[in-house]
Image 1 (tube, one colour):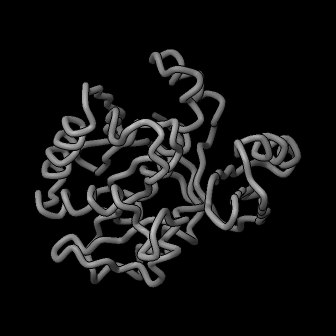
Image 2 (image 1 turned 90 degrees about the vertical axis):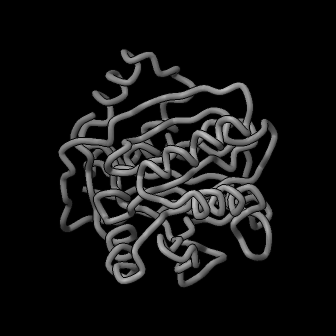
Length: 243
């Protein structure tokens, strides 16, 4: 199996990323597909990596979807769900404020996620401008999962986002992330999510205003497991088997 990863930048700012894990014979088709993903860029990196060992996650997190009339109502609900996942209200609000202003200490977005100490709220990622990236993850049978999601009423224009984010969130939980908060840095996409083992994958709209270019991910983790979690997120190759 081959990991195919795409990362695109525009004027030094990360604008798009995607990944597939496929048989060698599918690499050319998938590379062509990923080349079309960014709307605009001046630099793109495609990485191909042969994988020696792949772990299977039998079932993805269960999907739930909620729509609200305002960003504030949606964020209040996100805080409530994070509390259900065991995150304190103060830390849940701190994570939302962090994504709202841009998680990069120098301003703006990061390529990766924030690691937040679940007890103190301290940031634990070694490089706060880069963050931690969840990579080497895909669906065992991506086509069948696509069809299943379409039958559930997921709109086709949102399908690739949900496929990628759900697989990623499922791997995060598998690696030891206690809960996650995410919304996209795409100005045109306002749906975000919170996720954990016990609440599932909870899609929430709108977690930000339309035309807002700021977004990112916050992973709530236990400090004494940080090295183990980072290694799993960035090194371990996994395929998710079923919804």
